[in-house]
Image (cartoon, rainbow, N blue to C red; front, side, top):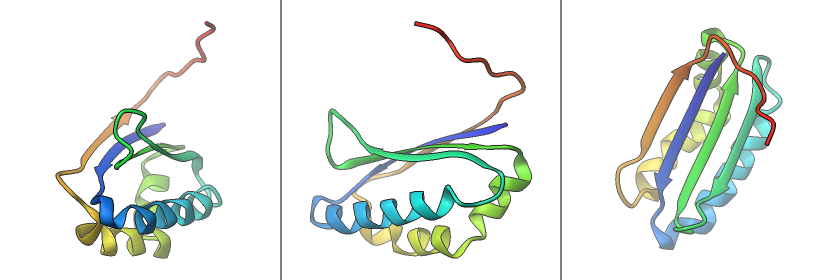
Length: 101
C-alpha cells in the first residue's frame, strides 16, 4: 500500500477556489481503481492549510492517479493558490493494522 500525506498552505484570497478544487479532486479520486481512500481536510490550527490523506493499493494506482484530468487540473492551478511551500510525504506500507483505542 502507498500512503501519501500532503499539506498545502493556501493564499487566504484563494481559499474558496482551493476548497472547491479539493472537493472535486476528492470526489473524482475516490472513484479511481486502486484508490483505497482519498480525503482532504482543513487544518484545525490554520484554516488556510489543506491536508490530503491518500491511500492506494500500489505504486501503479498512485501513478495512474497523477495522470488523471482532475489531478492535473489541481496541479495546474496550484501555483496560483499556494501561500508557501507544500509538503508531500509518501510512504510505502508493507503491513497495516487497525489500532483499537
